[in-house]
Length: 128
Image (cartoon, rainbow, N blue to C red; front, side, top):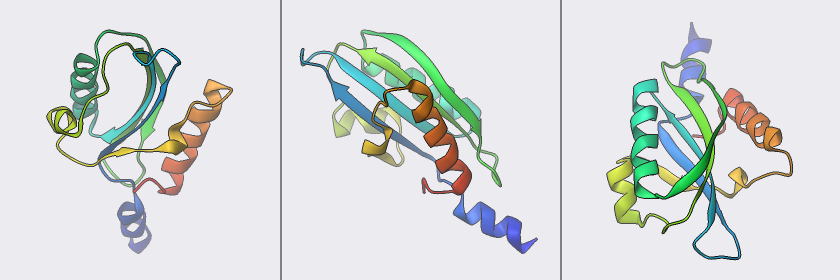
């Protein structure tokens, strides 16, 4: 029983982590966004984010899964946007919790490598 409690306390917390890579044209941005939360909240958070950064295209779900020892799930998505990047004030309208720019979510040469990295970090409880 104590092991389960230990696992739950080391589990990732509810949050958004993201990385944006701007292309030479400053109005083109490649996003990688990781959301950790309850499934219904993940859908709502992503919808608000998509609305805030429109226009956008190429939305791809890279990976998703359950956070062990919790009721939470996680989802990693990538997309391209052509508008402005949300300010800190706008982020609070998207999600009023932990939001962090995370360079470890930078795009890899192979899209599968980023998904495998996120899956491994979640499994190890390293995204607190």
